[in-house]
Amino acid sequence: MIVAGIGSRKGVSEQQVLDAISATLSEYQIKASQLDAIATARLKQHEAAIFSAGRKLGLEVMIIGDAELAEAGKKAPSHSDLSLTLTGAPSVSEAAALAAAGENARLLGPRRVLDSVTCAIAQSGEAS
Image (cartoon, rainbow, N blue to C red; front, side, top):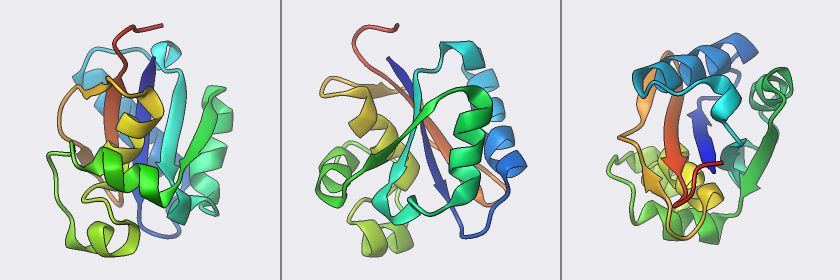
């Protein structure tokens, strides 16, 4: 399973989310068709652009609860004081991707920041 974890500032556009996903996938030579889901924090559950980007890509958007996000965040290499304060995880995108991809998931690298969107890619032990 391959998951794109998304973090963002409030009010980002669908295109900003799509651009961040595209740039991050390109960096790891992954096609959008290989993605299984998009994941984000409960805090972002009302961020319309993330959901519209998911619909455009034909992907489920998984909402990760605070406790699960904080637990997965222990493996996140990046650190944002704001993210830690708001969600309990040092990086929304990294922690969301890891949590959604499963227990033995690994990040392909640190999150990427494009405009006001962060994107991290996690892969479970078995890619789909």
